[in-house]
Image (cartoon, rainbow, N blue to C red; front, side, top):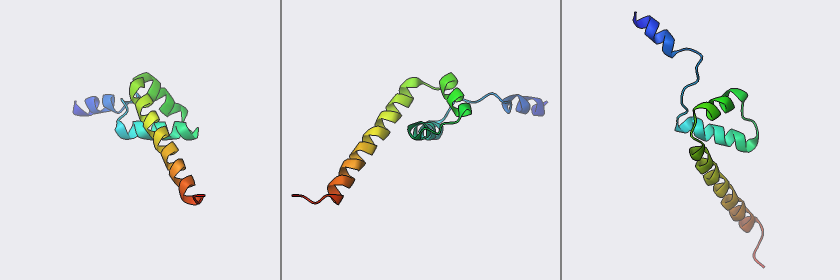
Amino acid sequence: MSSEKRSDKTSDQPSKPGFFDIVVSVLAALFGVQSDKNRQRDFNHGNPAIYVAVGAVFVILFVISLVLLVSWVVPDS
């Protein structure tokens, strides 16, 4: 009987994405390599506000890192 319950949970239904799944999905989307399976999971089970917030944080970190890199490479005049 417990094996029947276990098989119900291990079906092909995607589960609600966790924090690591959200981070990986946002990074994959930023690089443009998101898989269709993960995209469907995100749209069907994810909260859009979390994806927007994580995406905004990564974009801000990317811009800051570019500014720091350019200021390090280009000497002050």
